[in-house]
Image (cartoon, rainbow, N blue to C red; front, side, top):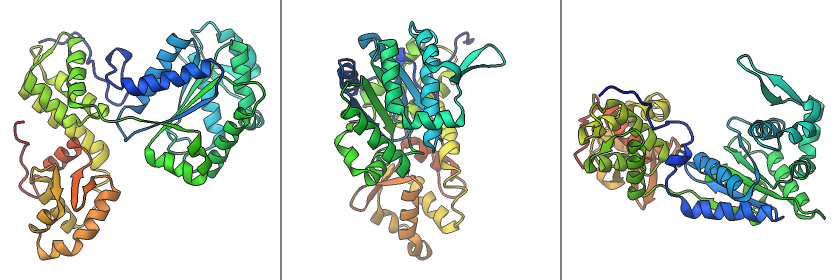
Length: 396
C-alpha cells in the first residue's frame, strides 16, 4: 500500500495530545493542584517514574489542560543536561517567553522583560530571553519576586514544569535554592499563584531529600506507572486508526507485551510496525517484524553502549548469553548458576552486581531477577545469537 500519510508514532518525542492514553488519576491530581494555585495557593508536586514511562508527555498534557480549564499561564522548561542555577533560570524564562508568543498576554511579558529580550533566528525571527551575566545572577536570587511580577502583569496563575532535573538533583546549591524559594513564597504576605511541577526519576527525588530533608513535606509525589496491557492496546488501536490502519488482536498482544507498559518503547514498536505494514492491516507478522526492528533501535541506543562495549570479559558475555538465550524474561539465580561452568561461577556474583549497575537487570524478589524491559531482553537475544543459542521469541 502506497504511503501518503506520516507515521502516527513519535519515538523520542512527547506524545501528541490526541494520542495521550491513560493516567487519568495522575491527570486529575495535577489539575487539582493547578486549580488550587489559580485560587491563590502555592502548590509543589514531584512527578516521578522510570525512564521512558511518559513523564514529559504527562507534564505537557497537564499544562495544556490547565490552560484550558483554569486559564493559567504555563511554561514547560526542559532541563536535560542543565547543571547550574543560572542556566536553569534562563531556560525557565526563555520558555515562558516563547510559550506566550500566541497568547493574549505576550505583549505584557515583553514589556516586563524589557531589554532582556532579543530577536534571533536565521529562517524567521523568534525571541530569546538573554539577560547579561549580572542580570541573570540577580534573577536567580529574585526568582520569587519575578514569578509574582509575571502573575501580576498577566493576571494569571503560573504553572511551571521543571522537567528532567536529573543534572540538578545532586547539587546542594539547587536543593538550597529550591528550599529557600518555597519558604519565601510560603511566608509571603501576599499569596503567589504558583504551581511548581518538578519532573524526574525517583532516585533524583531521593537525592534532593538527602541534601534538603525538609523538602519532603512540601512535595506532593505523583507516580507515573506503566500502562496496563489494556491501555497499551487501546493506544495502538487509536494511533493506527488515525491513519486508517486496522490491527489484528494477536498483533496487538505482541506489541503490547514487548512495550512493557513504557510509552517510549510503544512508540518505537508502533513506528517500526507502521513502516513495515503494506496493506493497511497490521498482522502478527508485521508486529513481529516491528518488535525485532525496535529491539535493534532501542538496544543500540541504550544497551549496546553500556553492555556489549563496556563488558569485555568473555565469561561475562557467556553468562549473559546463557541468560538471554534461555527465552526467560525473568530468571532465578540458582537456575542460571546450575548451567554455568566453574570459571563462570567464580564471577557470577560480580556479574549480577555489574548488570544491576548498568540497568540491564533488576531484582524482583529473593534470588529472582528480570531484564529491565522486554526490548532490552530481545535485543540481547539477537545480539548474542552468535555466542550462544539465541532464538526468536515464541508466538505469544
